[in-house]
Image (cartoon, rainbow, N blue to C red; front, side, top):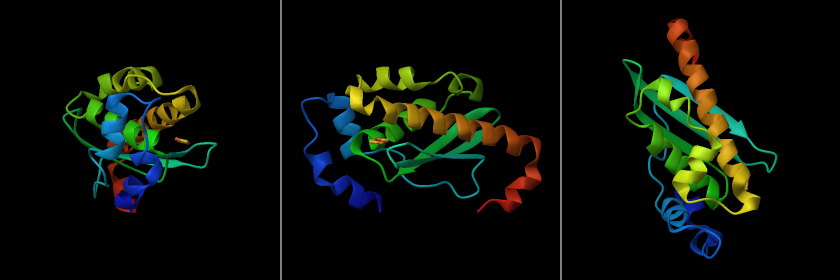
Length: 146
Ligand code: FES
């Protein structure tokens, strides 16, 4: 499914308004897919109708692996790719500080009409971290995860 998204012509035609970093991450997204039996999961949909999901593996309060999936635009793919790169290897407490602006900065900015893609990715990360805390408090809930 992701391959199809990456093939979309508009991604291949992304230029001008987008930084080199955004174009690179949109065309060659890192950390695509899910993590079976993950320690935290979040999913959000924006008003534009796009959805992004983020999966986390955590060991000793440190994020050891982070992955994402989206059906969204090229900018959202770049946001999912970059935000999972940013949190990998970080303590959970530090990952919580990553917000829309941290992500925009790491990506070299986004055009005004795509700033919401970074907000969506940051909200999804926050949800995955919240889920991590829930699962850590109530480990039996993991048994009910899809
Ligand atoms: Fe909606 Fe990118 S256009 S998340």
